[in-house]
Length: 133
Image (tube, rainbow, N blue to C red; front, top):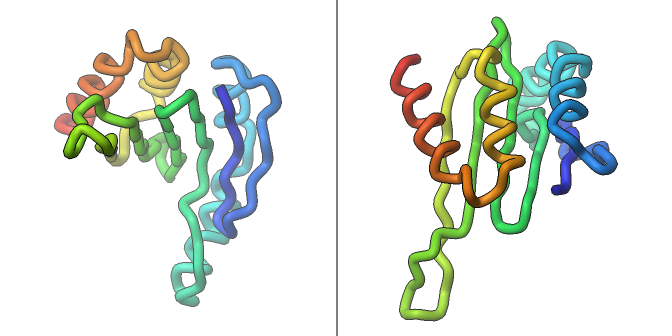
């Protein structure tokens, strides 16, 4: 697993040998409010910017957790889908889930750390939580 803190200005800080607990601690302790303010200034000034958050990559699966205001986060999950185009090219799938309560954070990140065996569970949970918003 690779992990990093993604900042609004495209810079990043690696998380060495990430664990679930370590990633949860970073999500709780990093000053996301300050980073979101910098993101919003860049947005107002029409500068290049990237949504701040934590990126978690395991092989072809990427989970990006983007804290926002009011104890919620946006999630972007992408993976290579086993469907092949012309039997040559892999097809990628992306899922965005907006304004999910941080009460679900530990479970969602845990599914990602569990690997391919919980990939379907992660996708279904994100879809269900998106419908509840």
